[in-house]
Amino acid sequence: MSIKVLLVDDEKEFVELLGQRMSTRGMEVTATTSAADALKIAEERTFDVIVLDLMMPEMDGIEVLKNLKAKRPELQVILLTGHGTIDKGVEAMRLGAMDFVEKPADLDALTEKIKKARARKMILVERNLEEKVRNMLTGKRR
Amino acid sequence: MDALLNRASVEGLRFFGRMSASISHELKNTLSIMNENAGLLEDLALLAEQGKTLDASRVKDLGSAIKRQIRRTDHIIRNMNRFSHTVDQPLAEVEVAEFLEFILDVSRRLTAAQVVTVTVHAEGQPLMIVTRPFFLHSLVWLLLEFGMEQVGKSGTLILKPRKEASGAWIRLAGFERLTPEAGRNLPGKQDETLLTLLEAQLEMDFEQQALDLFLPKKIHDASLRGSASATS
Image 1: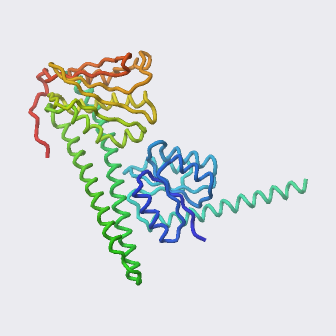
Image 2: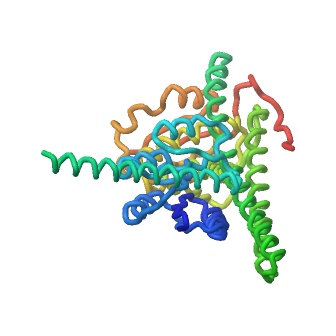
Image 3: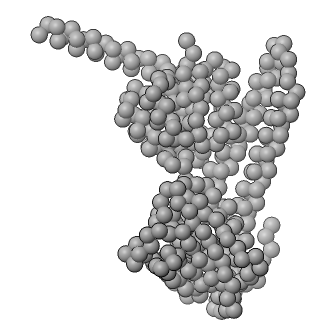
């Protein structure tokens, strides 16, 4: 099954090109240039990984990350940063981002991180499922 | 004057850092687009090696896209070079409207981040003043920051230069709720330092919902006076 990725960056040309290249590598990519749209799309559909630009108009990547994690803690977010410094990236990791990649991104390295992110999401989903089943069983015993 | 210059220089260094960071971010973006275009060219070449027909028009389009990003990068670097040289020009003659356009161009990403549109409405005739370009840039940016905070997201600000016998006025218009309360911290300490160094004055027009900045035709203070050096 292909990896479902939501790609968010305010540079239209960048998301289109990167999205196209990720698609040729077998990923199912949805791309948007708007942070607000990204939140809406992430609420309506299921994604394995969200690749998110850190600095965008309307709402920066950190804000989007906080919103996403509050609604769906299992979501795996990889941040793209144009900054030479790692301060924001570290802050993002603290807030629950899985990883960050500095622009210009190496697609092979990004693909590896996306694969790891999907694997991590699957583990989290399985754990949640196990817990639900356990709770159901515990409830039955009562 | 030395104490004033020292204070302005410390704050100026912060301003320089902020602008430089924004410029570097823009450069990273153009590099990223070029990187993806080049990557797609590689992908197409790999597919061609595997027997897929190479679409010549696609390759041509990618080449054009890379050239477009090179032009964009060149423009950003030219702006960066000019901005850097404002620091080593103690005094320089500037055309006010053109200089305001330059300020907006350099800080486009920062104004876009606030989702505020800022435009310059020039009178048409050149409006030359001799001023301290770096400090003028810093002061206009502080006023824009104040303006952007006031108008909020999706707001619009207009910079209107106007000629006067003794200098130039720059009107920052587009406010909707400019009140004495809103403007109580204006000018702030940093604004006042810059106003003194630029021999300028700042007025608030609550009726017209605008800020007016007056700049003299020529700085009179002899300290820090230097010739307008050529940029390279």
